Every structure is written in structure tokens, then in C-alpha cells.
Length: 330
Image (cartoon, rainbow, N blue to C red; front, side, top):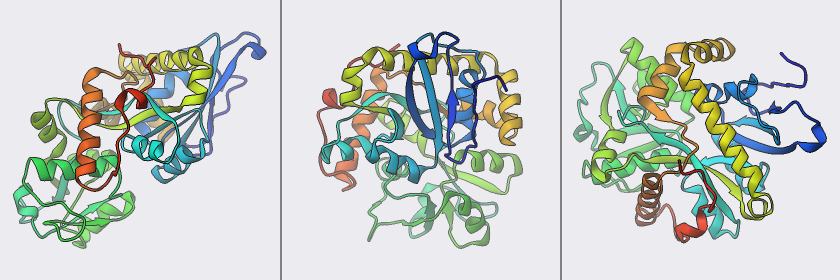
């Protein structure tokens, strides 16, 4: 490990990414909190290993679980935070000038990654069979779960109310879902990406609904579950630094996509993850785009408006105020 680089664990302790070789006094630092997931380590690998550099910026990057990301967003612990797309209206309603600076997670065009799974041999064969059943989710108010509920309501015709609806949603920690499904404590589960990849390999669980693909067909855009966000006062004070942050972060993703064998093997070894998981994630499950495209804005708008109708959000900010005007759109 080269001098000056301190890499901490993916448990949320922290990860420092020096990006320049010039005088340190001339280099500014931005703190970035992101989702603790092996896919994101692949996206950041080029930054950590000096393949992408900046003459003006140092990024101190920290992987966090979902609960920690929520806390960090409200506490302004980081300059840029990867957070749920529906967290922005919530923050702004509380008076926090949180603005979207980029797209964190965009569903892949293939539609994998947001499926509903059942145990092999289950009598549940399609989404229509979920009425009256227990479905495991990791957080009822998360953007990912909300998008699944929107798909079940708008595409499959379910009443997805948390109380008195057609489906009983059972919250539990994501690591507990496969065991609960295998033991029959729930009838179906919204497995997270690593679990879904493992299920595809073993055949222990079977997908009966591909909600991401359902929504792409329904709305004509790929949905966005997570965004990159910053705070208005900081964005206004140093816009060039945030533009540089977005540039180098996107460059790191581009490097991973262009050098998959190198990056996926290295990150697989570091995180004890099958390198094939990264190939599946980047080509079939999701994207870490950084850039904010017009279709992303449409997808966020759909999520926000449907969330209000479902009682998850109470008030929406004007979209032009919630998006930083200098986002990377290309």
C-alpha cells in the first residue's frame, strides 16, 4: 500500500483517498459517505489505487450501512452523502438544504436486482400469488422497498398499504432474510443484490417477480433508488471542488468498467467476494452512474409523487431547488 493511503474496513470506519502528488496545502478535502457494498468498492477502486487522480482534491471516503447513512445525512457528517432518493424531500421539509448532486443507484435496463424471491418448490409462482402472504423487506420506508411497493401496486394491482393491505410486509435485517425464507417464517423476500446473485448460482431461491423491469416498462424510465447529495451552503461556497469530485468519481467508475478483470479480481480478493458478482452487478443489476440524466430526474419525480400518494412523504420540494445546478449531466 503506497505511502499516504490509509484504507479502513468496509464497516463504516473510513477510507481515505489521496488523489494528488503536489503540495498537500494546495489540496482540498471532501468527505464522502457511501453505501457499504462490494459493488461500491469496485466503483472506487481506481481512486484508491491511484488510477484516477486530481491535482486539487482529496476524497476521504467512508462506507456506511443504511442506518448509518440516514444518521449521517441529518448530522451533515460528510460533504457528499449517498442517500435514499426519498431522503431529500424529508431533509428539506425539516429545513436541511440537501441537494442532489448526482445519481447513486440506477436500476439496470435488464431489470435484475429488485426481484421478489421464494423458496424453491414454493406454491407461489408469480406476483399474483403474493396476496395474503408475508414478504420480507429490509426497511419499509427505504427507497428500494418503496419502489417495489409501487411496482406491486401500479403493475400488479395490489393494495400495498402497510396496514390492511393485500401483502404483509415483514421488516428484518437484510442478512436475516435468506434464513427466514428458507425456514418458512416468510413466504417471499426482497433479497439484496449479493443474496440474489447467490440465489441465481445455487437455485435455492426462485425469482417470481422482477419489479425493476416492471417499472421500466410501466414508466418508460429506469428507476433511481439512491442519489448523491450535498449541502447547499457548502455547494455554493466551493462549487469547483464538487464539480471535480463528480469528475473523478465518474472516472473511477469508468476505469472499473473498462478494466473489469483487473478491478473485479482485486476487489473480490479484498472483500472476499466472487469476482463474477461484480460482472453480474454492473451488467444486469444496477449502475453507479454519478451523472444525473433527464430520465433520472423523471424517475425521481415519479418516486416522490407516488410516495406522497402512499403516505410515505408528506410534502415535496420544487425539483429545481432540490437539484444542484452544476450536476454532471453527461
